[in-house]
Length: 573
Image (tube, rainbow, N blue to C red; front, side, top):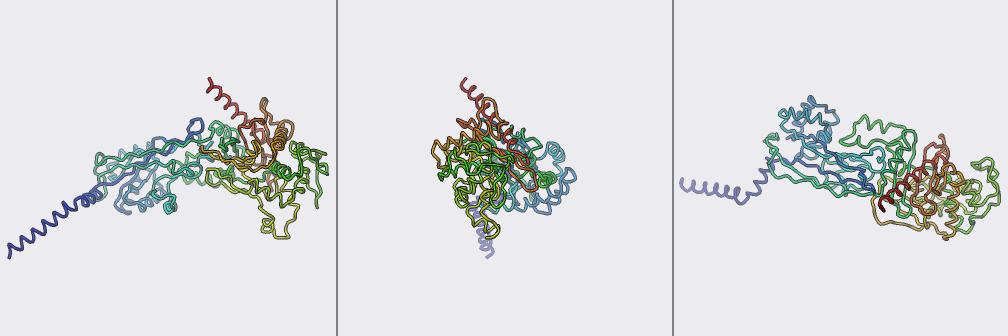
């Protein structure tokens, strides 16, 4: 019986050993490896962003990351307290490290995404005191022209818990970086690198005992570069021209394709400060700044377009057959127009008996009051919708704001009550005031239609097939009349002081009234007038008069066209 029991026992043990070591060998080896090895992510370099001429807008520089392997939250807290006695780690950084650990317990908890060389040197000297410490190289995002491209490119930041719950960020893990705003956010999938891995050997307490040659590394892979339509030299020039004193925005487009040449918002800020995590004090200073540097005025700033919108009134009047370029209004401009009350013209002396062409060049309010009445409120509202003033432009950037334009009279009933308004609102709307607020981008899009054949180009920053939509239904001769009148604005009208010798420019100034502030200055135009290659929309907050904005805009046009001419000559040589 004893012999039988022993045989049975050894048979069972042998079977168990055979099952564990042979039949389930791979399963237990994997468990053993997972207990012995820890995966350390190797961040990849995000895609480089280039301008149209191959200049770098965003790139990656060598950096360092510092992280900790820990078996538990309590152990990590203890290690962080010890680290804080060696290098500076504030409470916010410690809390963030704990959040990262809870989100992915098998991954090292990142302490510093972008550690300075001094911090790395100190920690390397005392590495033996921190067995779970991992220091490795990690690419960091760098923008050579940070403040100049902030509104355009955005920045990178760590993926949040809220992000991780969204389908857009499926597959992301705590501690990884994602794009925030601008191109970085819009083209996150195209710019994201494939993360690599290396492995370290740990003991039962999750302390690193060997960190080299444990297992072959999986190298990260960088994505292909992102090439844009931006002219970085022009972008820099806009930044230099605005300096620290002006507030506003610039949008420059190619009229035929909609390619964005420049998109700038002032004041700006240095997006490089966001790399590796932004200092709370600096971020608070940006949020508390009354000039709102983080507000993208080019995409989200909505302003009364003032006289730059008069071209829409002129187009609608001509489309309806109410006027032509030589039409005069019944009442000459004497400095004001009476319609229930006196509606003033910007020129108190008046412009006299003038044609539509002269009214555009001199920006006569009284002429456009009467034209607006001829068109009628309902037709004016419907015409504004047709011209796209109530829609976003569909630019390939996030956070574009929808302009304000009433689609029908129901808007006024909702806003003011059925008896809280009257049809005299058509006078203000016809000159770009009242319930009309446009972004610089939406005005630039409208002028791409005026500059070409009546087709508005959809703005885009990453090269793609042009998209154009017919919004102006005028005969070619009528459209040329409008274009000649716009050229007169710069040659002898309200923007005459902004002329550039040897360059014919067409456009329209605008001076928008703002309650409690000085007037905003607008200019939207294109050059050369006879063969447009660039459309520029610019607004200067509290710039007083549109002629101020015109001088900045024409300088930008000159800069771009001269650079383009030089580049063409060099290419031909």
